[in-house]
Image (cartoon, rainbow, N blue to C red; front, side, top):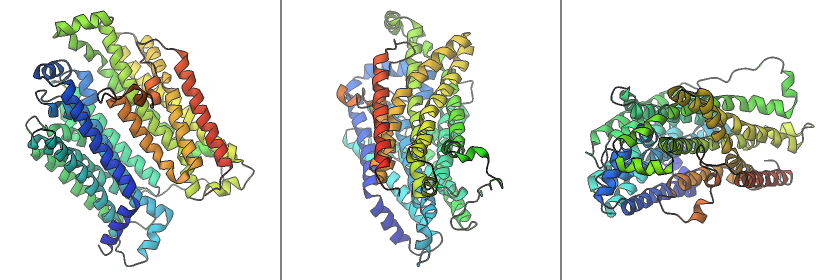
Length: 530
């Protein structure tokens, strides 16, 4: 571990702004949500009604998990924000570890550092220490903040440590993923796939019902967060599971570091054919070769996610059976079909946010090619800058429609089978998913503009997605002003299926996306490559 302290200080120095944004943002959102929940559900009666209508419904279980105890504000907070908050903590730790391990190897900086008095395992240990510390600080600040707001100390620390525990697990996942591939991008994709599987296992296990495979929840770190039961029993012993898994993963990563060459991965890059195919003779062909794996992976993933969410759509109607008062309200809205459409519109909106992650990955491939010095040889040929950028932007824009259509197809097929109308539901849900395409295009335009104007800040595109997620999922709960929620392009999308679709907002979003894209093209033509 020689050099560990210096590398930790270096990482903290480099990421001082990034870490501050993550910590302040996640803690601030959690405490703001707690305050708003206390205002909206201040009376025991309102919380009991919420527990009766949402806590045992399959649709809400798949989206948010079980509401173990609605008698306290903290219990409602753990249900409403627990899964999404833990997802963000996991993403933070995963990106931090990859950034300070595999990305440093990929750029050659780690080889220079390793030539000094630095042990072989010190860079990995430093990355683990930074990610572990960041997630733990978030958990402790959440616990102290909730205690200061008047919630029970036991429940506050159970929720805070549960948040931190998800970060611990994905610190280990990121450490192992960084050993497998020679590319930081692939390493993040591996870790992201594990996070996605964890979310799906939790969703299926939570929504399975008493006779279903509820044990799937226990296979997911996000499920362990729920099983901690913050403010509903505070089962601290569950935290031993993520601690044990973190220890196993970190030990495995440290063993793998010693078994591979610096700069190499355990899974070697496959050699290409002796002669390049004719398709690589164009900018589009090269972009297809670079983008196809990610496009196929996201298409299959969102198809499965749509199918999972679609499988529990009919469960929304169960809320009407035990609540006569709610039956009258729903009847005024248009009947049980209306509440199912509200649920479907919500899950399509969430899937659209997930598709924005694909769009940012696809667009920022340009930055990866540039920083790894592969863009200059391509642009030294007759390939123009417009053609090179445009070939990747084409996959970001067309790929958006492909992955969203796949999600709508998965949801429509499963829901259609359950209601006996496969053709009708597929058409409705594919159409609803494609309605979100202009909003996702705006995200692509923002990422391209950042890449072209301020390339060093291109990674801020990820922060844009987080902001849009908070505005969309927590904006009404936080009682934000309408102008603030209107900053998210997803706010302007009609709530389909169920709502009338008007062309005006979709047209305006498309024009905004086109303007940002044009700005990106123009700016890249006027700056130096690299």
